[in-house]
Length: 143
Length: 143
Image (cartoon, rainbow over all chains, first blue to last red; front, top):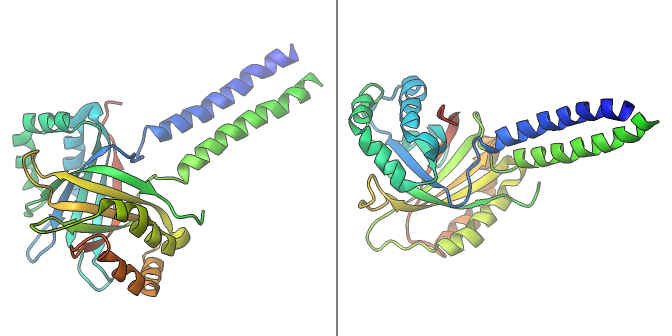
């Protein structure tokens, strides 16, 4: 009976740890073969960009249009260029990590007007858009 | 005694699962607050880019210079622009996910000549370099 009483506790612990692991796996892990939509906002004189609106309103809205095709999205804020003294070439860069490019194009086409009309709410920059395939993920040998 | 015999098995299982989790955390997971060096290779007429060399030789070499400061690196291959009919604005984009910008600049400065001399081995493109801070990672609410 002691054994049987102990068994459920052990399973609960394992279940909790596994749940944490599987949550991590469903989250922000880029993988080779995934596709990535990169939206770049080039820097320049008289350029404005409301990062707060982009983070809290625009990107979550577009993410919602993408459904399960979206693995995760990421927002980068430009802080420097080649050296710390150089201006960042891009004020901000947004990324959508997706699995299906055709489905992405369809979702964007269906919501095109809403997306385009929202851009003026956070920036006067015309973004550059690129679709890429993740070719490689790597590490150095030190770890 | 039955309890005590059962306990080690339970701990071993938990340790194995935790080990798997912590391995995942050490790999390619971007995090808010990390810094990212983005190296963009603009597309254009007469531009050449040897992705194989970049993947197998150049990026692993630079990664090695960065030591423990490098969390992971990523290579994107441009496949399209805003629509599938548009040319990708960038042939390739490389990323170094790091924790310390000053340390990165120091490591690059120390190996500057080797890095610059290697670029001609895979491309005739002058890369654009940006240092960014990861501001946000997000998901949609469907999962």
